Structure formats: structure tokens, C-alpha cells
Length: 303
Image (cartoon, rainbow, N blue to C red):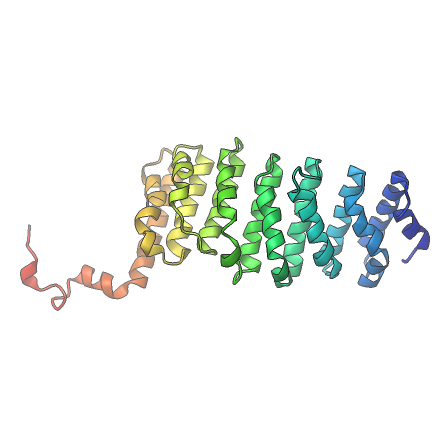
């Protein structure tokens, strides 16, 4: 498995030889007997290829590292070297990685790292925030979508720390509503849902303009807006303090032109009502049954 000629080719000045070497290494990585020890042998030239002058070679090394992560090998060098490299490639001004497909591949690699390293990424939250904020501002829609996916994944794997790091994402997500692709607007709503329910975001004022446009958007976006409102009504911390700001995201659907949106809105409204009754049992019980001790009979007027 450890081939000195292959190692030398990975370091070769000829980009075609480096490319062929990366292809050969990819085949080795895909073998069942590929181990962390073998990875460590090729580690230095492989990681250096992330900054290779050839676009194809940079793309190939991302694929190779993704395959390593999918095998759950978890080499420590990926957090200490790859994350800073991705930040350098995507967050410099101007952006160093000018190939759209490679920027997307770097984020796919990052997504694999988040999934694999889990809480081991606690030391790299600042770099992750920089990378994902840059991705949300990218001109390539697929990069924006993948950045949203990474943020949603972070809200799960770093649940305790996410509220402390999520604030920079809000303004960047708001920018996504300017994109002409409806899938980006839908994904932005999904990301906002995570920021409000898993983070400490509650700035509805900043969202007023962009969310008001979603009320008259295409059905897919309106459905995502309805789901956003439903999640906030069920999962958002301190949601009752913002009840009057959240409920419009549910109530608009009751009179929507789309039958499925109307149906879901009614189901969500009933679920939210039952949840409210459960969480405020004493208050709702008093209102429903008119307890004489709380509401004396003489205070009621029969119409």
C-alpha cells in the first residue's frame, strides 16, 4: 500500500504526473484495507495539493479526502490543516479559489468533516463561521445551498455552542432572499428556522421586508414559510414573547390559494393550539371551564 514512487509523483513538478498520482491514490483509498497509517504516509503531499495550481488536481484531492472521511478514519491533520486552508481559499479578498465547482467541492468536504468530527470542531468555530458566511455570499447558487446545509448540520452537532456562534449568519442568510432561484430562498427559510430554534436569534425586525415578500412568492416558498412558522411556534425558546410576530407565518396559509398549503396550515394551527393548551394547562383550563373561583358567575353576561 505504501508506494515510494507514488509518493514522489505526488510531489512532482509536472501537474500531469501529480494528477495521475492522485488518481492512483484515490484507488488505494477506496480499497477496504486502506488504513490511517497508509493515509499518514501520503498525508503531506496530499494536503499540499489543496493549493495545487491545477483546478482538476484541487478537485481530485477534495474527492480523495471526502473518501477518507467516509471511511471514518478521522486523521487529526484534517482539522488542523484543511479547515484553515479552506478558509484561506474562500475568505480571502479577492477569493483565491476562482473555480465555482471547486468552491462547492471544498464545502462538500467541510460538510463531511462536520459530520465526521462532530464536537471535535469546537476549537474551529471561528473559522467555520468565516467560511460559511463567505459561502452564503457566494455568487454560485450551489455554494450558497451547501453553506446552508452546513449551518443546519452545525446546529445539530454543536448544539450547546451554536447559540454563541450563530449571530453572524443572520445578515448573510437575509442576503440569500435576493437570489433568483427559489430553491435558495427555500433553503434560506430552512436555515432561519435553525437560527431561531437552535440559536439565540429573535430579531424579527430585520426579517420584515424579506419575509413579507415570501407571502406572495411561489407555492414552494410559501410552504417553506409555513414550515418556518410552525417550527417557531413549537420549538423556539421564549416563543410566547413573540407570539404576535410568529402567528402570521401560520395564519396566512388558512386563506392561501394552494389547497395543500391551506390543509397544512389548518393542521399546524390545530397542533399549535393543542401544544399551547398542554404547556399552559392551568390557564387554558380556567378559560375553557370557567372555574367559579377564578371567574365568579356575576362577572359573566349571557348574550
